[in-house]
Length: 248
Image 1: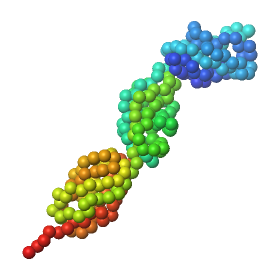
Image 2 (image 1 turned 90 degrees about the horizontal axis):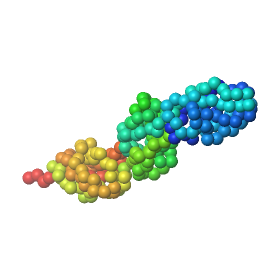
Image 3 (image 1 turned 60 degrees about the vertical axis):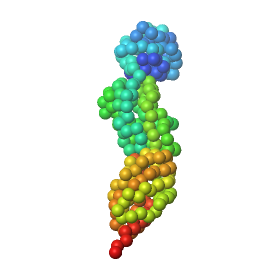
């Protein structure tokens, strides 16, 4: 007499399908000593029942006018506990793989990022690997993990859009560097690097739309300014011009 699924939440509520023979007239299904909260006679070979709360491993039995069946094991699984995400942010386009760390994750069937759901790979009872789905909009979303034991929430993941440069001002400065430049644009809050003509430049994030940058030394002429965040990069071609000092 197989049952499917053969495991469920300690809180009960798992819909279990019991398959066998001579099941017509089933009057009771028990999980250990507890009765199922709902029993439906589907056919002479199939019955469905909703598991009561419980713990550990219990025998499931079925009673008909002909008697009580032999027990079949059902395993109660506790709710998962999530302790951390390997990465807490990533591109709006998704596609990056992150880890979910915690306990009770071995029966995980889905990981949700807000309203978006992905199927994880179970690495161990304490870790999942999951490919992040594309987000609907930049910003934080709640992360939940669903297992045979239930669903657990409490973690947050932030979708980040690719940065976009609107202006670089002032647009000129000496080849010796040291010019304080303001870069305006969008999705700049998570900037992790700024380069001018390929050379890293010191910067400070003032807001999601503004960066303060100090130019490094460079060679005379128009050069590219590149802003990078975890989602990608944007290049403002020839946006800053190095000017050589006077010579006598």
